[in-house]
Length: 113
Ligand SMILES: [Zn+2]
Image 1 (cartoon, rainbow, N blue to C red):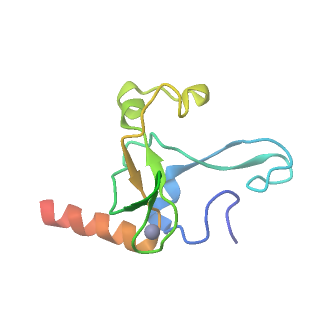
Image 2: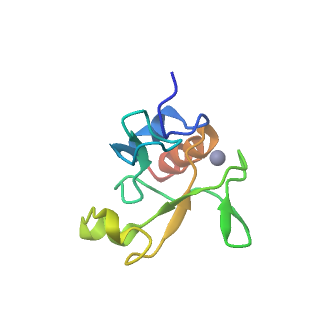
């Protein structure tokens, strides 16, 4: 079963970066009650994965999907305000949620240990 709001290519290790919240009725990425999973750009475990850029957008070299933003300032300040999204806090990096990107992170971590 696919989870509303989480892309099909998302690896199980990356599902925690999405939080269940109210988005609004009638939205494609929400269920009939208006709820769905939403990207949490301030999750404390988020780390940038390899990327390439076309115009202003970052893409994943493994799956070619558009990447998700990371907002580290938001993590540091522990502020989870929806209104500040893309306004007060800069995007500090990008990550992909596909299996290969998650595998890359795992590999990086093992190299450090
Ligand atoms: Zn990817």
